[in-house]
Length: 29
Image (cartoon, rainbow, N blue to C red; front, side, top):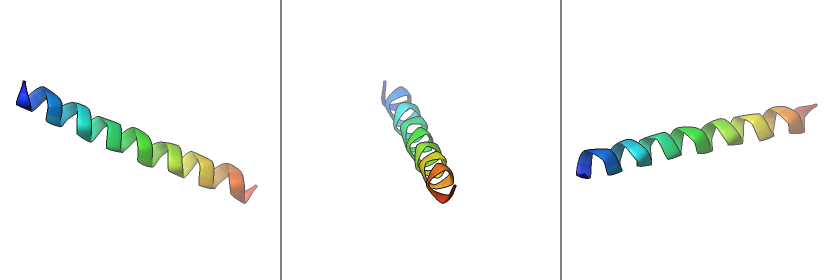
C-alpha cells in the first residue's frame, strides 16, 4: 500500500507540473 501511495503522489506531482507548464505556455501566447 505504501508503494502505491508513493506512486500516486509522484504521478500527481507530475500532473501538477505538467498543468503548470501548460498554463504558462498558454499565458505566453
